[in-house]
Length: 136
Image (cartoon, rainbow, N blue to C red; front, side, top):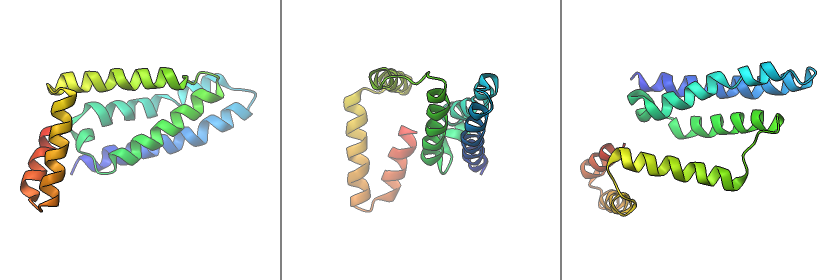
């Protein structure tokens, strides 16, 4: 599938950023290189969150975690990390936008997740897959 390369590219971008920014910081705080190292990971985040292939990519969650770690490391090296409160607020805003785009409320999402879990427990994988696809 075309989705696998999206997650692999994201993981590569995270690894490249994670290896580039520490060298740049050690090289007389080479801020332009640190900032440039953010470009590919940010594009990868957009691809994973915004493209059909990215949303279906196997390894998407692991790639997002790696991207988050790399980006936070680079931003932290420059003193640009967000506070925990700012990060929670940004995540809440992104969640609200995602729910709005999906046309779901928090309660509807929770009900769909419970329904999917029940279908999986009952080994009704067709229903489980259908619900997963509706939520994707």
